[in-house]
Structures are given as structure tokens and as C-alpha cells.
Amino acid sequence: MPLKQKLKNSEITIGSWIMMSDPMSVEVMALAGFEWLAIDMEHTSIDLKSAQILINTIQAQNIKALVRVSKNEEIIIKKVLDMGADGIIVPMVNSKEDAIKAIEFAKYPPTGKRGVGLYRATGYGTRFEEYKKWVESELVIVVQIEHIKAVENIDEILEVNGIDATIIGPYDLSGSMGHPGKFERDDIKEAVQKVLEACKKKNIPSGFHVVDTNPEKLKEKIKEGCTFLAYGIDYFFMRDLAIQGMKKIKEGFKK
Figure 1 (cartoon, rainbow, N blue to C red):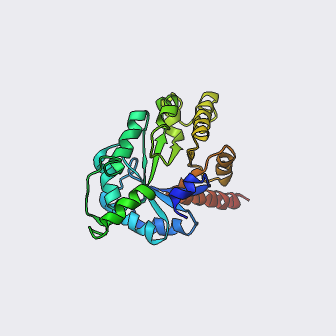
Figure 2: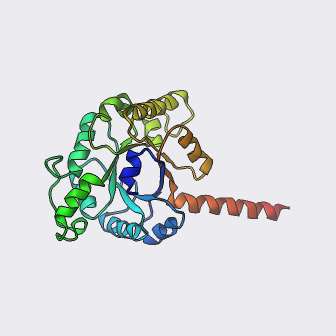
Figure 3: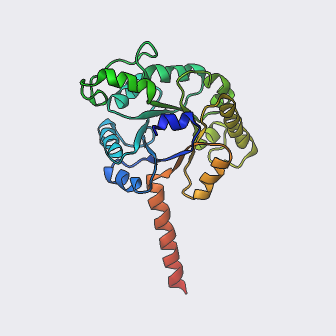
């Protein structure tokens, strides 16, 4: 079933975050059974050339390739979609106007304002009409709620037609409230809950990036009602297992 349809049905879908530019990391992550992988171009050294290779590699594994673009800006959104990405995750959508811009940058007229580029997504110009229909029926647009201003404006943001899901960025949200990483604070929990309730009311999938590799943390978000879930980060899985393994080995030496 297409990812967009699963989102419409409010079915749980789990993906992960790609922050390493080596396509081998994608191939390894694909073994876990993720439905989608998001290439992070906001907080990494991944450039457009590397993103193109990663998109191709992800799709070769029969997984949806999403791109968290560097910012809500026309050129970067247009480029990654022309490269063939299955969807975008747009950071720092803090207002209704921000949401409208994201939709307009991603979709062709009359829905949006995206310019036409006859690149990979269109079969290098051989399938433009088919791709136009695909954009309307299957392109996934996710807005990232990661600032207290977005929480305050959440009802207006969700009124914008074309949003397929939201995803909460917990670190930046807590940072915008003056307490980066302090997720257990009551005020931060309340902010997250406000977003979840607004999404439920509007029947728009609510998402969350659970960066912790402990699967119990992800289960907690499912219980809270999140259906679009990012689990971990590529190098977090490698980091955590290496640290845990070496800790046990060193403890054995002391006995």
C-alpha cells in the first residue's frame, strides 16, 4: 500500500533517519524492515549529489525515500523532488503561511507554484504527465512541528490542504522553550500533547522522531497516538550496540 494511503488511513508506519552519506548504511538499515527512510539534509554534510545516490539506493530496496530538506525553501524542495524523492519533511513550519509555502513549493500549478524540471522523477522527461498525477496522488508532504510557535499555531497550520502528516522534533521543540533535551518537563509534555490532540481532531497523522534506539520508547509514542514514527538514527544503532558491547567486555575483565 502506498505510504500516502497508509497515512490517510491513520495506519502506523515506521521509518528511520539517514545521516551518513554512504549508501552502504542504507542497505544495512533496509535489512531491518523499515517502510521509509528519511535522508537528513538539515543537520548533516549530505549534499545534493550524495542525496541523489541515497534516494536511488533506498528506492532500490523497495523502501520509500523521504528527504528532510535543509529549510522551507523553493530551490531545495524542487531539487530533491526532481531527483525522485517520494516525499519531503519540511523543518520549522511555525505558521499557516509556512505550511502554504511548503505545499506550493512541492506541487505544480494550479495547486502550487513548483517549476517544471524534466529530471529523474519524470523519467528524464518521458513520463511528465504520469508524474504530475503521481504528485497529486502519492507525493508525501510532512511538516515538522519543532518550535513553540508551531505549537501555538497548530490549529491554523493543520487547516492547510495538502499536509499528509506532522512530525514533532523533540530536541528543537524543547530548545525553543529554553530547555533543550529536557523532554520530561511538564510544560514540554503539555506542548507535545497539544499537537497530538490537534492532529487527532483534524484527522491528520501525528508523528514523532524517537531518536532513542530503545524500542520501548517508540511503543510509548504509539500508545500516545502517533502513527508516523521515525525510530532511531543510522549511526545511533551502531553507536549504542558498540558501546553496550564494549561495556560488557570491559566488565568481564574486572572479574
